[in-house]
Image (cartoon, rainbow, N blue to C red; front, side, top):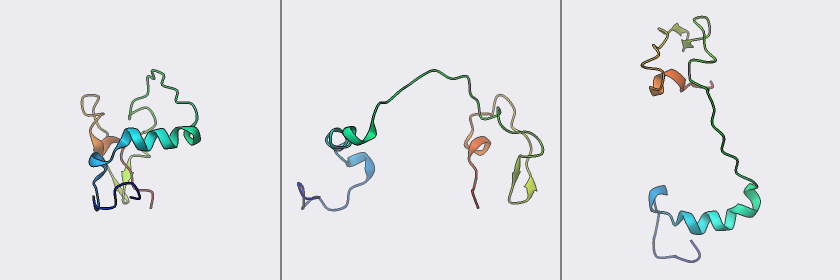
Length: 75
């Protein structure tokens, strides 16, 4: 905001991410990327797959990467 006071409010996609990350990197530490065999179905079972008190149908393997399979509300 200080460097570009006339740009106004920007959406995240319009931010200068390279400039922002260059300032943040000393505080972020090392970035480690490793392959994983995790899937959204790995940690759920019929008993725990409940949304707002309503038991939900378990997703199939074909649908496991749909948002509904792994998004949850921490209420």
